[in-house]
Length: 253
Image 1 (cartoon, rainbow, N blue to C red):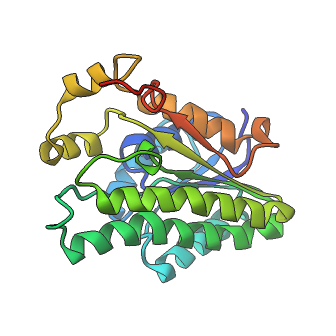
Image 2: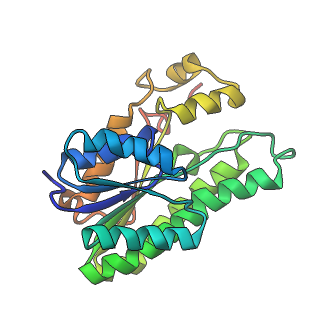
């Protein structure tokens, strides 16, 4: 019960990594806010955890909308009395040749993946400061360290998120707020399946390129996020943990 009685918001938690994180945190005693842009999707994910007896609520929120973010944070504190942990997981991707990438797609990715992460961290920190501290974990990507073609917007946000994580960690350390990142490589999720359709790669390409010869699982990512959220990581801030099966270490093809 490493997170017993901790209050946690996991953005983008109606499916994929976020959904697994929410369940993993609930198993460790946390009170959970499930988030999605869709109230219906959030309700469905929350219902699964409620059936297991966990203390969960569902709040719809578009992370790129500052007023909606503010409202979600206030509703969380009204319900649970505080906020201890924020997992900034909500994200989108648009894959296209950079010369063809539309303004609409560029802004959609920037607004959610980077601006939304800042809004979430900023509003969460206001409540965490009152409690004497907290933990914020930003879910970035290996594309925040290296790049591949056709991901100009996505890679820009993930590089930016790595820098933002460091700035906030240094600035808020005196407030007792730790800020870290987790950078997954290829994890088998619905988002990866969408990316394969437009990215020109398949499962065999990923398994061949990854030293561990397989995709990662959402639980493997969630366990690292859990560590950073817990008191076991009390002296860890301003860093990003890579969960990539050796992808970044390997310089071959």
